[in-house]
Image 1 (cartoon, rainbow, N blue to C red):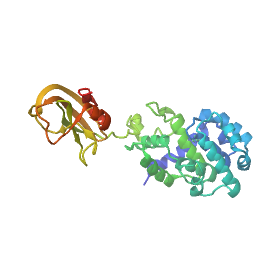
Image 2 (image 1 turned 180 degrees about the horizontal axis):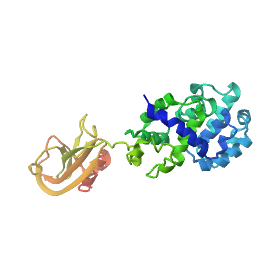
Image 3 (image 1 turned 30 degrees about the horizontal axis):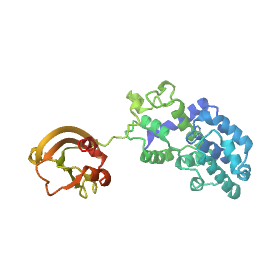
Image 4 (image 1 turned 45 degrees about the vertical axis):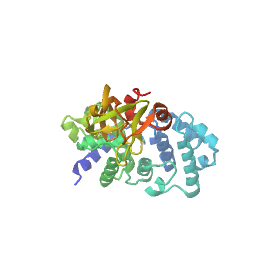
Length: 329
Ligand code: ADE
């Protein structure tokens, strides 16, 4: 059923054999060395990891050596890589591995400290020969382009592509896993700069065929906000100003604010002194406000009438009303 993805596997593997970068963690691979490199490569660029990886492994060549080190020594060897919780996690993982042996299942690897879904996939594919995809934003990008797939690069897309890749995983699990990463790193580049002429998928890629490789992955749709035109009244009566406590189920429920109406006749409340327009963006609603500063004829009963001092000290007025606060403060 998944023929395009299936057809893409062998060309990718052939390309990887010829074109892969010469990276230190691609030599003398063992479960322990892959654990080290994959934790280092979390949040850190390949170029920055290269030297540190070699130095770290010469200092701690085995899980036992790392397990026996003090935390200070481990942190020292990690120096410059940043995100030191990774070093502490690696140290804890090494103690587990030294005690119990390296896990042999995805679940076992995933349970090691510092190992998430992506890292577990990489370790299992590269070190254990398991069909365990490692899908990050880069892999989503190359697959959405190959398939001209309109989804955005969210967690759900990662899970779904992971399931689809699992169906077509070849016996060379490590090479396949790293080939997907490699294509995203050196050919199928983001931000409108893919090097399609050098791509092993150029004859297969649906986005390329349509001349639309940079459309993918589609950006997460910004949910449109509902626009509400509202009238905000800043009513002054002597020393006091009208507030309302906003009702349950309304925006800003429970907060005090100026009276807000979908429809009202401001002139009915008194003399209009000033008018000002302002906008406020809530998560799902945009208020297009027209504020009226009004000298009220009488203190309308439905409002709470507070002095300027009381408002400053006692009532937290939400930011949505800030454009109109200048009228009273
Ligand atoms: N990023 C994460 N893991 C990697 C690997 N094994 N090779 C290159 N880049 C990576």
